[in-house]
Length: 223
Image (cartoon, rainbow, N blue to C red):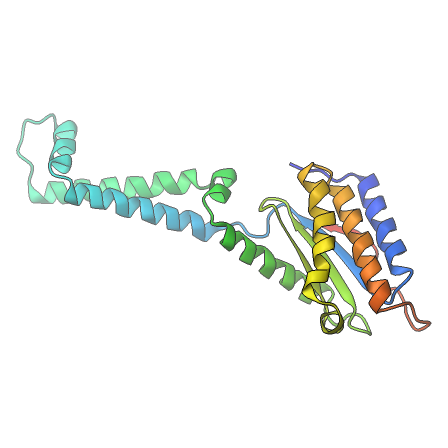
């Protein structure tokens, strides 16, 4: 698990301040352990496991009777009601055990499709941007650098004025600058590098004007 120190926070704040010196843009940096708890994934895997057990008990010849004999010692012939009760108990047991196992977050994350994690991280980044930065700048020039460590995903979200002038491919350099150091465990280095690239983009397309003020605090936000 990563840990950002007070010195790391100071470095990021300084990088934001420096990057904003040459433009009217506002840069927001946010990190989080997880963008979603994925509770639905745990329930889905538990339900799938329960259905698999139910299918095995239903369609594998002799399996249900064999389990009944293990429980009763094989001294009595199984009755329909008792077999149905055993099926219900085994199905519920499978559901509960898998649901409990899926509470272990590394396992849960490992079993979640990458596309799902990407969508959830993107959605969370957009929500954070809308709540904390969208339309809070006079020129609509805010940029969010968002890093979600648990999913190993990052997003760059920007305001409408930037979307109109800067193509999506331009942000690829910022993502490379961010993720390269992060993959090596140097989280603060990656964030600072991404801020520098974003600052260059903003300076090119939105150079500093006399009307510009610092509209959003220059600090790293950890959620």
